[in-house]
Image: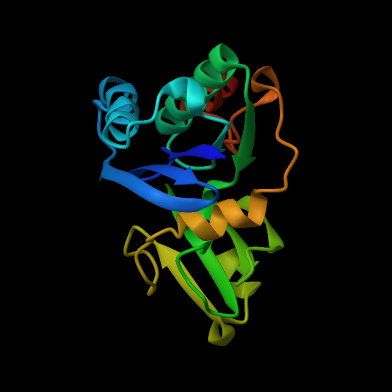
Length: 205
């Protein structure tokens, strides 16, 4: 079983290659305005470096959001295109769950800055079970709903006192390896909020 893992939703782009759910190689780079130019060549590089033909891929794990709107769109589109061309399934995963895999604390709260005092967040246990569903929420409201003494925060930004994400790809894949997977055409991004353009259009209306 050969699997490709993609997370393009946050500040750091993560590409992983796994054989029988064991990580054999990974590529990380900063998410910038050149993601659309870098992602496919980086996938080719990781496959070539490990003498894997793209036709040997059995499935794709992809984070579908929330996070960077552009990053989500690019990652999901690339995953869907590859999966459709190879006639393989996609296993969609929350980007917040990917972040939560960083910690082995009893309870982990991944946080993505959504600006203007709001965040994308949820609560997970150390087995990556979702305790509080992912949501777009005011940061103060989030804190009021948590017992912060028992929670470790994981965040790329300095809006909370926590640790920087360093996702455990093997842990994520092993959690989801028995998932049935879905048809590429059925995979959709999860933004949790509307884009600024949509919000401005509503305000004009």
